[in-house]
Image (cartoon, rainbow, N blue to C red; front, side):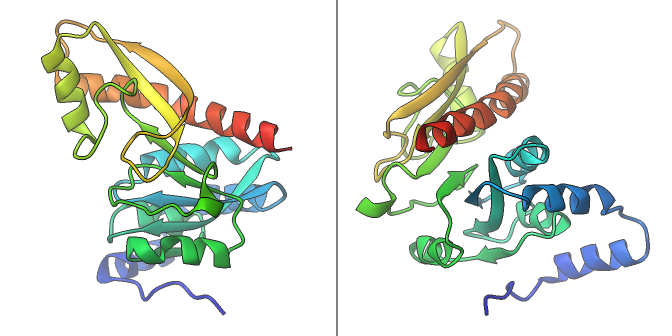
Length: 219
């Protein structure tokens, strides 16, 4: 039987906070029940704070499209606490072990949301791994272009617009077929943080829409 990995001290503290009543877990438990009602099985890969995971969970909570059934990271990170809050199994794995574990959960698709390691995608997984990138690919993509590095590159280029892209991942960084994009204006007074927040708000709309497009096409 598959089990969650042993929790770190950070996760033990999280559990103690819940038991003491200092953290409410009522909303995640309601959402989890709704997510598991029906739909395709999804794995979610991340390396950071989990904002994209949480947005997707909230979007799927009242849909019959898909269920996130496992969260996988290449390192311990705050995103795993989000998985824990929603009572989802999570694992910290070497990237080479990731798809093996995904297959054990019988997942139909993989969503990458800030997953920073290179994931080898074999032929049987081509067209089944989605990634979101905070620029209008092919601009400002490739190895080393993630997070604020992307937004700084946009500002340095003098561009008047940027955006975000959902694409099928392949074995090259940010090179897979594009599913959907959404444009975002660049304001002359923007800092990296200003632009990052505006792009993230757009990502919160784009990723669920692109997932729905892919799921509808697979029916």
